[in-house]
Length: 148
Length: 318
Image (cartoon, rainbow over all chains, first blue to last red; front, side, top):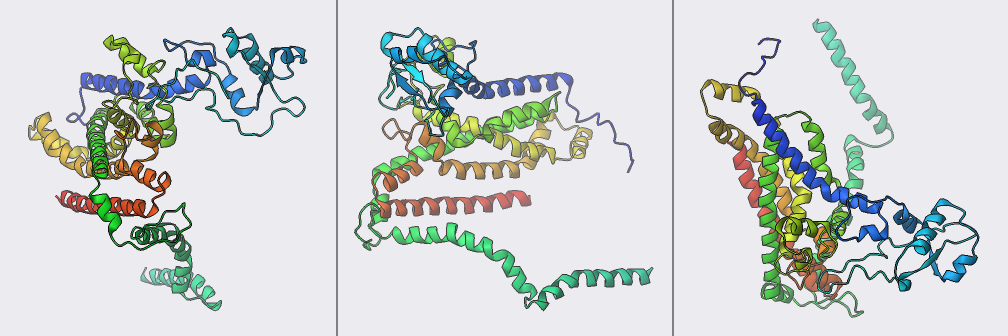
């Protein structure tokens, strides 16, 4: 029994085989990881981008999904929001920007006010309240964004 | 030399005996200490595994409905007769069989193939192995939930890509809503999620084959195909069979992923037995009936797994 390992000339795969194997495995890895990457990207999309058609690969990242998730917001009239003092925090700005400044049809326009004195409370806000796909037997149009 | 050995033996004996004697002073024998260590686990197992099982077997002979205040009435084997003569349940078993068969077939094909390719040890293979393993690390509930987005007919990227490559309109088919496609959708997602598992076990099997066997085969002028058939395959087979066993059991009782993805729909085309079990137990509240179905499911899996393990042992001995 020799101390030095032989260089294994026999069972070593040829460079071409190795290259091909690598290409196939990497292709599979990329295909299999795409849905995950897509979901991760959707987390940083605005509501419009998330349901855009054709699906958007490049988009302006935003934290509004996370603001929705971790804060409690109430719908207010446009006049009410106009009277409010300017937003205090970054998340308040995000919430107001997208609800007031977006160019959606008038009926869709909703104004968001974050709770004023104490900041966000710990109340649970369902993350799926905005988009819920029901594609089993009855299909709902995804553009139908009316909440409540 | 023998003196020192003896001395060490005595020292070890003392060292081993010391704690036991210390405990015995407090009135506990070795055996009692042993029991004391096992007891919490045993109690836990009895409470959350064995007791519910026996309770379910008991309930399966009653016509109990858990949402009614009326006490359980013993009705003998009526539940079992009902289930085994119910064509819907047989249809559900058929759907489950379809699901298990195709899931396993695809997983073995892709998983073994990937393992063989990764075993070529190309540059960066360990990194890509980790990437491939990612789907397996997610919770099935998360997977079931998020796959509804790519399959959305109007805006889903999956439909868009299929439409892009085939030229069909993306909204012309619904992976989840169509009677023909839905059974394949659950197979696809389950395969996507669990192929890495089969791959991992196969890879472990491939790595355990010593190189010298291949070298000996080379010396004997065995062709690469011959090497694969008479070395690689037989040595990986026990591992592969183990992976198949785990995956078969797992797919047979699959609930969370499919329930969140299609919840048995459309109609009952993806209603696996576990989903009809849940519907009977928590939607129709036929607790006795559901218990009987659960017992049947359990006996089926238990029996099949036992037969399979016997076959596995035979393969291992070769």
